[in-house]
Amino acid sequence: MTLHNCKIIEFPKINDYRGNLTFVESSRHIPFDIQRVYYLYDVPGGAERAGHALKTCNQILIAMSGSFDVLLDDGFQKKCFHLNRSYYGLYVSPMIWREINNFSSGSVCMALVSTYYDPEDYYRNYEDFLKKVKGDS
Image 1 (spheres, rainbow, N blue to C red):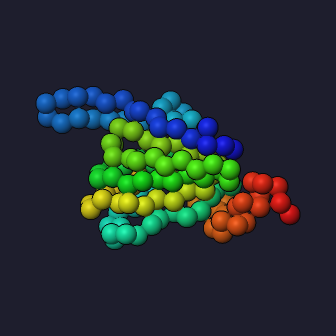
Image 2: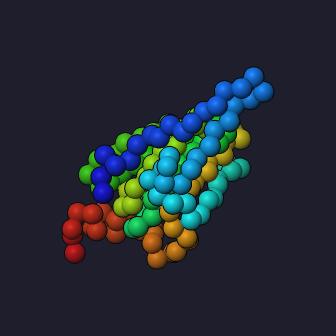
C-alpha cells in the first residue's frame, strides 16, 4: 500500500441550532465494515501513541474532541495530517506506519477498525516494517 490510498474523508454533517450531528455508516461512508471501535483519551502532554503498522487492518481515525497530528509513512514517503474536526476521518490503509502526537488538552481520538484485535497483525518495530515494504530479507 502507499500513502496515496490514505485520505481525509468528510462525513455528513447536519447543522441544527441545537447542535450538529454527524454519522458514519459502514461500507457507505468508509471503505470497510466496522469490526472494532476504540478511542484514545487522557493522553499526557508530549506523549505519542501508535508507533506501529498493521498488516491487514483498515482504520479511520477521528478527532472526536480537541486535535492531534497523525504521521503516516509507507516506507518511501511520509505525510502528516492534522485532525481537529469530528466530521473528518483519516482513512489509513494496511501496511502504513502511523504515529499520533501533538495531542491538545482533552483530545479524544476514535478509531473505526476493519478487524478484531489480533496482536499478530502488528509491525511494532520500524526496521521490520521497512524490511517488509522494501522487500529486504
